[in-house]
Amino acid sequence: MGIYQKDFNVEYKADESPVTDADLAAHKIIVAGLQQLTPDIPILSEENADISWEVRKAWKSYWLVDPIDGTKEFIKKNGEFTVNIALIENGIPVLAVVDAPALGVSYLASEAIGAFKDKGDERIELKVTTKPNTGLIRVVGSRSHPSPDLAEFVKRFDEVEMVSKGSSLKLCLVAEGSADIYPRLGPTCEWDTGAGHAIAAIAGAKVTKIDGSPLIYNTKDEYLNPYFIVSAIEE
Image (cartoon, rainbow, N blue to C red; front, side):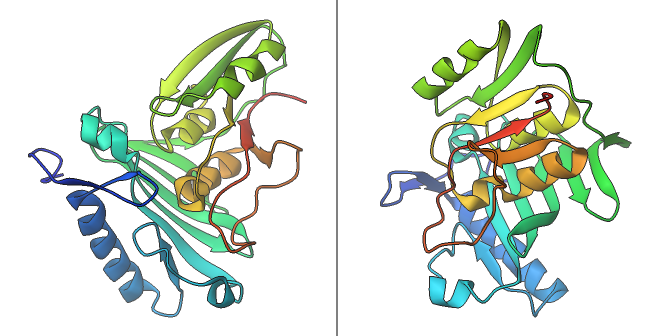
């Protein structure tokens, strides 16, 4: 948070996405901690993504890390950035932390114990309550990456309330019941979603590709996700 509170350097990658001093500093801290905790489990981080598919396809378990998700929100200093850490086993996120340090909020999930939200000294268990596909539907979308496909998607609902949010907080809003559905109809990478996916799914939300099939990780050479939907709406 020391970098966040000061002026900081912003550079741009080949794909024109921004990266700051904080991304790189957080990457080093997280990777060092995970290597000490689980030296035998490989780590894939956004800031160290040049690991070949030939190597990765043999992984059964690995850590998936986005040191700062929502770098544009970090640069804007609106607080809506997160640190994402997920353990992936056989393509499925099974344990995760999503930390929003500027907001003082953390989300935690494990298949063994459930999903939780920590704020201050309070811990709340997250359990999704599904709702009918009628009445007011709260749809969460990206604050910094608007999608024309989203406007078309929401026409299927009778009444819609749009909620804008940055980073993986969008998935967490569905997990905590502050939104009913998050249709991601734009590009994301696996490190953007792995931790939030675990939070939402373990809380009881459905996380699927557009065709209804499961969203699976580490299945191909590239890191791009297909379009997907996180939903607490009854089918």
